[in-house]
Length: 150
Image 1 (cartoon, rainbow, N blue to C red):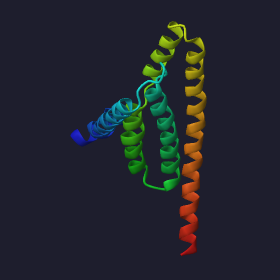
Image 2 (cartoon, helix red, strand yellow; image 1 turned 60 degrees about the vertical axis):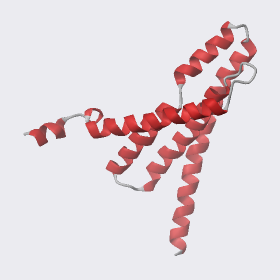
Image 3 (cartoon, helix red, strand yellow; image 1 turned 120 degrees about the vertical axis):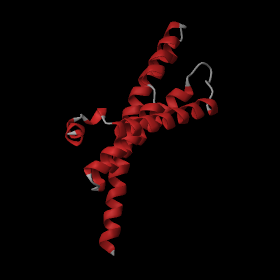
């Protein structure tokens, strides 16, 4: 009876999967804090938030493309996606801080910098994600060629 109830439990409510997201999120948050300490704001520009969001977009694109092409089991890929994609990248990147930083820049009268920051984050984030996807696809093709050569 208990095993049957566990099977029926939705994936996002399973303790093991929640733990993966929690652990990844804690590590991602620690990583973001490290970047924040290493990259102070430059002339009012929130460089740490900008950096983590662009880097996070690149890494998320790379991760998802790599998992898609890896041919690993769906269960293994799901765990990696939860740990690294949802957990780590969710804790590492920060949309809310990005939105607040943009609003603060605009509210302080730094309209040019605020618009540059907001548009730069969105455009460079999308570009970084695309580059991560291309990198994941390229890495997989190289690995396949190396296996064929053996």
